Length: 138
Image (cartoon, rainbow, N blue to C red; front, side, top):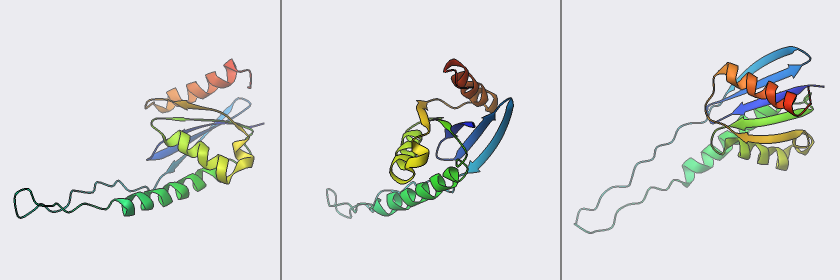
């Protein structure tokens, strides 16, 4: 039985595999671009209409990049029985939703999704070990 904790945000995913007393760490860097669209051009006449920036293209591109990123992470989870997903913001929840819709066999192994602030590598490992110890899964 393999337990895994996945720290995931928009920049990186850190996978912590726990099997018996060994800890294996793997890191996946996302290729998600950082978008900062600027406002449209201003009016020539005071109070005139302003051009609007269409950010649909940016959002659609980010959505496809997220799917590719999630797919890379999922490829490493084929052997995992107990999965904990954690990290800042909404990315852990989006990842769980992606598992639910596209990878139901892996989604069935997800035990919990935890919102957590930024952590060091040792803190990430400790959180996962403690979670499995407290829930008597180790």
